[in-house]
Image (cartoon, helix red, strand yellow):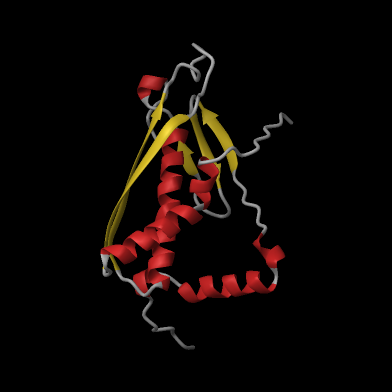
Length: 173
């Protein structure tokens, strides 16, 4: 049995990403993917999302919104999804450029008016604006970090999903 002792920059398997890129270049149809989740209600405002074979992801509402505050609520999870997606982008792009990440933190916040959600007024029940601030300490010149930042923002799947209309169909079975 052999053990892979190759050091990985930023703990990223960039070779796996490279193999995927090459496979998609060779067969563009492989780029079309479908992702799935199943959510089961647990009572009150509590539910759990099941994704692949991972432990369920809990969801609840704060006490002020009628929940029991046992987990992040869906709009908080949406912010977290964007932050996680951006973090993946920074890790992948900085690693591909040979740049060590010393520290990466992304602070996110969004503005949400509860009138529509509570049925008090028609309008937008979702965020009116989302802001993310990236705190990045990496072994590179500011110009290079700015270039990578632009690439990360412009290629984020979650960022793209949030920044444009996406067809949504919700069926009752």
